[in-house]
Amino acid sequence: MNHEKSIGVDNACANLAIKYNMLYISAYQVIKENICNKTAWGKKLQANRCDKQLNANLNVADNFQEAQYSAVHYNL
Image (cartoon, rainbow, N blue to C red; front, side, top):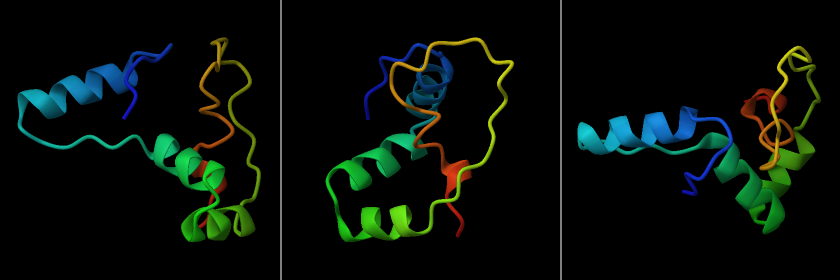
């Protein structure tokens, strides 16, 4: 996964995973990749998407479209 993020949470999680010999998967990156590549799973995600309001008080740049592809928008 791409760990060059404007918000350090991915870096912190990736570093912890490395330290403890674990795997870190960024959910929004997996969702984005499948939707952009129009995979079968991506099509199912798009069909099941329901926009949910995110906290507008967070004043951070979203250069990687994390808000758009956040797992919160997709029902199980």
